[in-house]
Length: 120
Image 1 (tube, one colour):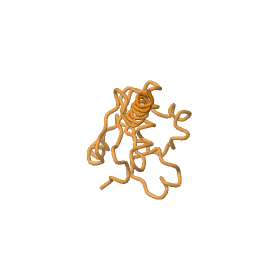
Image 2 (image 1 turned 180 degrees about the vertical axis):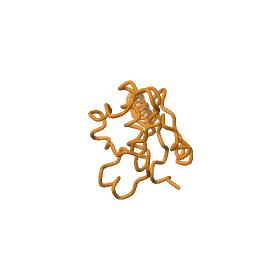
Image 3 (image 1 turned 120 degrees about the vertical axis):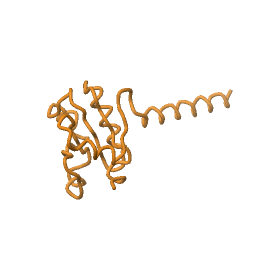
Image 4 (image 1 turned 60 degrees about the vertical axis):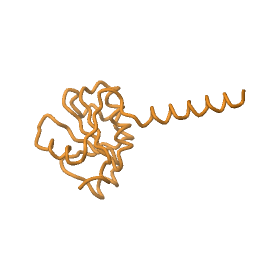
């Protein structure tokens, strides 16, 4: 019986980890190179969800800084019908931000995998 409980616990923990870090339906992933190709498209919005200090230390135009901690309140600054490309330092916060935007009704959300750490 104890073995079954341990296996159930491991399965639940694994499921939680996979769910936490997988992209939600309707969110796509792009590389930094693919993100760069979208820079001239006026129908794409670029947001950087790092803290203001991180953003000021190093950022790329045309990314606008909206820290993850304030994104839910400031999402009204974005057009729900335009694509939103989201970046952070490593890709973890941008996944959270992408999921938040999808829940708020944004149609086309794209996460930059690897974040600023992968920028070439």
